[in-house]
Amino acid sequence: MGRLAGRPLSSLAASFAVFALIASLFVLEATSIRGKSLTYDAPQHLSYGLRILHADATRFDDSKMPVSAWNALPKRLAETLEPGALRSFLAADSTARYPTMLASLALAWLVFHWSRQLYGLAAGLLSLTLEVFDPNLLAHSRFVTTDLYAALTVTLSLYTFWRFLEAPDRRAQAWRGLAAAFAFGLAQVAKYTGAYLVPVLLMVVAARFAPALLRDLRTPELGPWAARLRTFVLWAAVFGVAAVLVINGAFLFQDPFWPLSDFHFRSDTFRELRDSTVAVWPGARLPLPYPYIEGLDWVLAREQSGQGYGNRYLLGEIRSEGGFPGYYFVAALFKVPAPILIVWLAALVAYPLLRRRGARLRFSRDEAFLLLPAAFLVVYFNFFFGAQIGIRFLLPVFPLLHVFAGCLVSPEVWGPLGSRARRSLATIGGALGIWLAASVLSYYPDFLPYMNELLADRKLAYHVLADSNLDWGQDRETVDRYRTAHPEVLWQPREPAAGRILVGINWLTGVSNGRQASWLRARFEPVDHLHYTHLIFQVSEDEAARARDEGPDR
Image (cartoon, rainbow, N blue to C red; front, top):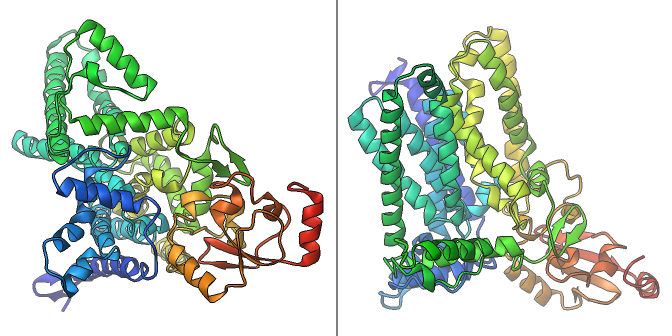
């Protein structure tokens, strides 16, 4: 007893737990898309994906990427089939969501695998649980967008880079280095967030080799420095070549080596770089495809100007220009489940204490690959990024913190503890797990507008956030059905009116319409909601008359 089919029973139980968690993730995703519309920009993602599959990478906007061909593949296959049930299934908008779901399953397994390699099996299961019940990742794993792919490819790039630097010999280093180089390239064609991996990987390298470099400083010989420099230059070239090949391949090798002088850049940064480079080298050409550079410049121009993102909204305040420093801190405080925040904070607080007590936790070799990228992205998005329209931009941070949280249950932490302490911590962990599952599942099937228990009344989420944090157009079909069934309901009246009124959160807060809804927002609170994205108000004749008399602002 104790073994089954030659394997330890505990190993089989762990394998079952992993399978059950990942299967649960897929079930939650697949069943919660029923009746949900595509998000506002999903048709453009699908359109660009189909364009790629038809061998054309020409851009029609700034941020659509070749990875969307994965979502468009079912529709492309449907085009080759005769009319019938299979063709109808493949051509359906809902089917285009399944490729993103598959990517989310790969990300969940990667989080488990990395955490297990770092901290052991129990840590892997903890990290996987956090990943599966992360409502933000869960919500975006059902969409035809690139946000989930960004989280997957950034995590994959950092994981393969960690494996590369931990290679036991040159042969393993060569293979792992090539894998890391191509993973880095994949991140560049998933979302332009992948470009930030350049400074991130340099930070990680600096942290990883800082002790060795300090040792080299104590010796007058140049040999060690020269050897390290040669290795760095060699692998930097490998990563650069791999990225160029992957980007060119994804963009179908469309117009590489376009003359730099012929680019009509939108961003000040790219125009300045073009002018200064052409002044020195008039015939300069770039080895990257024209659509890739065009899109990168376009995204940068939007960030610099702030145009194209609409109004920003936070904590009841709306701004048409400028942003809110710390926006993503506030968004995470409300949109990340409280149990996950507690686990993250516990790991961050416990980590230095564990190191001081002699736990074998190697920051420069392991945790630097998790915490330095997370810190870089958190600082950048909170204080230097112009698109304050949803926590989705911060998604690549979450898997890294889920992996890091595994350090709390590593054998080196639990080993020295007595049985009573273990039971107490296990009880606390179990309670947090139940709280997490109950909190997230209570929003089923509406994971995008999830807000944790800091928000006492879910109808009042618009007091804190709006835009793609809550409503990204996913309930348009539901709203249309409700309005058809209730023709007496008033739809987003610009002037004070009496009766039962239905409004979208983005209209109410002014994200999509400025101050047109101020008469309603300033005086009334909703009495009901539709899937947390649309609110129902009840206004009497007397209240509407007073609102007209008082004007738009009280």
